Length: 287
Length: 241
Image (tube, rainbow over all chains, first blue to last red; front, side, top):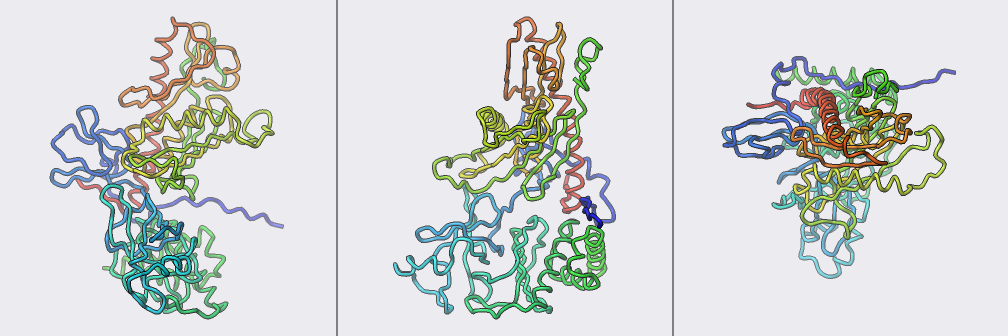
């Protein structure tokens, strides 16, 4: 009888060279950034006694006369055009409230949703009463950010086309720091291994079978379930070592992971190996 | 005072060994574990997120909700009652008031910040360690604050001020004076006094306690800077000067 205890893994930097000057420009709350009051204060700064000081822990960013502090950890802020994955929390009068990991829940208006059958028309009273038939509390949806509120930063999301946005069927949701999702043109990836990965800019990553919204999917086979579980563990390994996520690196990680069993991928040495090799592989490809 | 050495041995203002760690609870937005001597407190912070309760929601700023809990295994005698008692609620409200002064709440209207304080081991000064750990957890979550909030407790024994007292020293019937301070400006955010403190001692107790808070801030800042540098390198957040 052997007791297996997993030692906690310490996050190590996968980046080979560290900028020596990094430490000089790191500030913490209350640290003075500059005594020069001419600067315009942006995110992460505040006016102290005759100086501009930081309010968060992060790196100083000075561009011309604008000074800000890039926080090392923060909630997803949201920009117009981002693809997000979210969970419906409330069904209100003509809109749904969706939790996408930002400071306030997002709003999805009834008027900006395609009805089943790829229909976009003016919604009537009947549609309002049937809202729960489309999206109920707890459903996972994929949508695009259409507006960012000026005063409170509340996001408004909509579903622009029918093929990609909509309710997500059975799959796995992983919450990842939003800073690790690389901005790219495509967030919706149909991988060759028969699974789909949606990299929400808000850090919500969905892995599941190929699907078309509103069409029923067949029962997911055992092999496909294993593929999905493997992809999930690969993504968790990459995230544990701070590697930015995009489709090719996930596929590289998947290929490297094939020599291990799916459950072995949760061991810290295996996670480190996958993260390290995937990162190096992606660096070689860009060169 | 470290390991029960009191004024008789001539090291009254020495504080207990401080250890801290950030990001210890992966599910939370921010978390920290702080140990001062044998007192261990774990704080998890969630937020800012949508305020679910319509009654408490504030349109101009965020609200803080704090829950303080002493684990049943956390004190010398096992705590049988599992429900929150009056003392825990009071400490929770005290911590909430303290941080309402330090956190920039106007940046997040209609939101809520949840602070969960769990005392894993209580050996005196639990409220102070809780405040220190909450500061670190809020920084870990990236919630903007005007400055660190550092807390330190003191008592007076035979005319000298003892800082950072443990359970044994607290049980002597001397005054228990706690200050929470924003060290960069020396502004007092919270003050608590138990039992009676003679007016003659007040000035020196305040002076020593503020100095104790400043010393704590230096130690906490060291750990925060180490974490920030590591995270900035990992997430490729580059400074631009």
